[in-house]
Length: 231
Image (cartoon, rainbow, N blue to C red; front, side, top):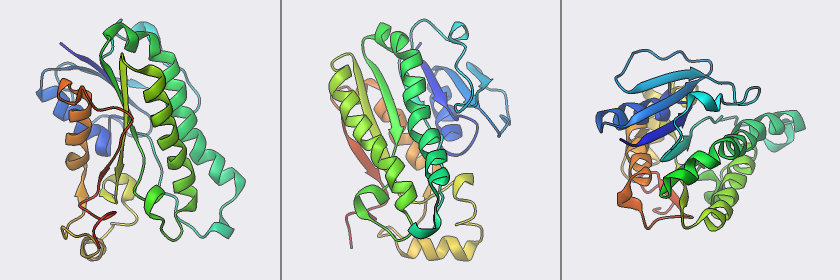
C-alpha cells in the first residue's frame, strides 16, 4: 500500500485528490487548517496543521512516504500599486516557504521510498501574464523555479513536478465564481467553454504521483482547458 501526505486535504483540489487516492486503496495522511474534514474515509487520517506556525509531528507519519502534494494557496487579485509588502510576504510564506518547510521535514521519509513524487501548484498566470495577477504570479513563479531546481537535485529517487491550473471551481475561487453568471462568463474565455473542476486537477495530481508518471520530472503541467495556449 502506498503512503501519501496531502497538505491541505480537506477542501478544493486537495479534498478531491484525497477521495481519488482513497478509492485506489492508498494510505493517506491529510492535513487541514480552517476547513474541518466533512467525512471519515477508510485509510484516511486527518491532522490539524497550520503551515505558517506549526511543524509536522513526524512521529505520526509512516516511515516511508511515496508522495507529497502541497495544496495551500491564495488568490489575491489587485492592481500592483495597491498590494503591500505585507500582502506579498503573507502569500509567499503560505505558498512557497510553507512548501519548502514541509519538503525539508519529510525528505528522509520520501527518500526511503526510492521512487517518491512531489506535486506542487503554480498557475497559468506565471507564463501568460494577466492584469492584477502580479502578487499571485510572483509567489507561483518561485514555485516553478523551486520545482525545476528540486527535480534536478532530488533525481533519480524523487520526482518533482508542478501543476499550473487556470481558474478552477473551488472554495478558493469562491468570490470570482460566486454566481452562475460569473461562471458562464469565465467559461466563455476558455477554448473548451467550461470552468475547471477540482476533480480535473486531482486526476492529474494522482497521475503524477503514480508509477505511470515514472519518467516525468521537472515539468510545469498546464491543466487549463487550453486557456494558456489556444487563442
